[in-house]
Picture (tube, rainbow, N blue to C red):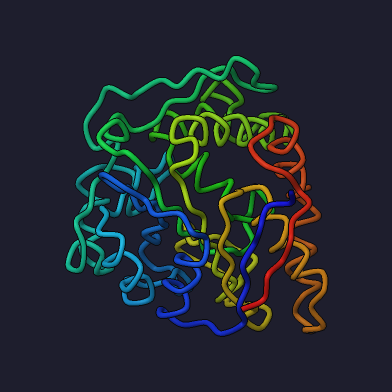
Length: 287
């Protein structure tokens, strides 16, 4: 059977929760809620109020990891300050998974580009994960969605450099591009395997800029909002988002697609599917 991807064009905090429920999976135990806390200065990231109903329903902890580049989230102290400024720690329990070392190493025996992934060690404190992704463009990956959240998002600061450098953080900005995309897929595989069938993925197609929420100076959104998607399959949900962008008649669509295609963003999906994280064919269920 094809994995189900639930979709609604009604974008609201309540519909995020409704689609989570429609997946039919109840996340038990200690739930890590992975989202993007937003770089200071970024105007497009999704705010705490938007995710409040689903986070309170699940009863989990908002988790993040430090960045590997200059900015407001590259040290534990600065990241905690940003989490406070952006309202996350005011509304929810928060946990920087790599706030204190050492990192946790996850092996990737079948990895195409890398064979290990370094994640924040506090991931071991959680039994399941809700991945809340803001779907938009990205300066390096082409797009950001569920697979990026699993890979770069859960990687520690060192792990981010390891993925970008395809095993050598010194090559952060200079590694072969398709190999970097494959390294992201490898890293996503390791986290998906870690939690196995204890994950739910939600992608929100709102405020879609060509730039990521990690950019302090980002372009404004270039096309109209599309909707919310939910699935148990991270490959299918990202593929569905790409398909919805291609199907859009919005005039700003081409600007976003130029960013995605110029960075060969679909290759991350191709590589993840080849690893068996999920499949690209899906059943879209409109709500």
